Length: 341
Image (tube, rainbow, N blue to C red; front, side, top):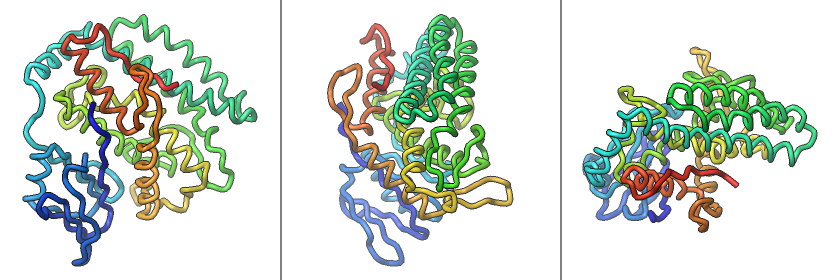
């Protein structure tokens, strides 16, 4: 099993990353701020005006360290990666599965079942812990429960995708009730993207971007092609399989982290700014707070529901990617998605 390693997030404007022996060196204004051995790093994510030497890029590629470049507000720009890892037979099997409607529906069904079940559990736990909002959440909880057998019976990817969309609308229709901090200034009237229209949506989009980076790295590590998915079909530049697998973790990891940051007062609405495009963007200090919280959440331990072993939250994408690879190779009779307990 892949050891859970660390992702370095570089947010300082003007930072310069270079290779120093077997370490990654980060300098800001001529001063070395951090030196980390390459074998301790899983990925590097650079925000804004951050530059990297070609020698370090090559060194990261040789050691399987993915490097992603984002705008200062977290919009994905580019990714640097090395030679394709893994068995070519695995990728050929993946492409055959993606071309087969029945096999694609089988895996798409698993991803969506886990997404809906985990989303429902987020609402159930909120209703249990905060009885005052239970009545507002109950219709969505019931609707999500009713959609699970519909997904199990669905015979095509298109029908599964439609059921997933309906479930997401009901879930996000009550998501604002989970933001309990009265003085946070946050409100939520529905999911909005490209650009996000309010601070809560900006926060969700940012954490989803971080999660996508980790899921993509996990798929590459086991030899799967992140671009070729089953629920999310091929589109130039879109990591379809990474988006597929990410569905299992959205509510459990990303949504819960966003709610925790808001309800604990770690982020406030004043930590965001409105742009001329009518979009809302995260300020630098808020971004740093979110990055630290995301890394801390990944270090927490839980018991994996399928393996029945303790693991870190950050290791779960790697475990699920490995299980998915085994299913596609034929080593497992079915893919066991991540159902949060």
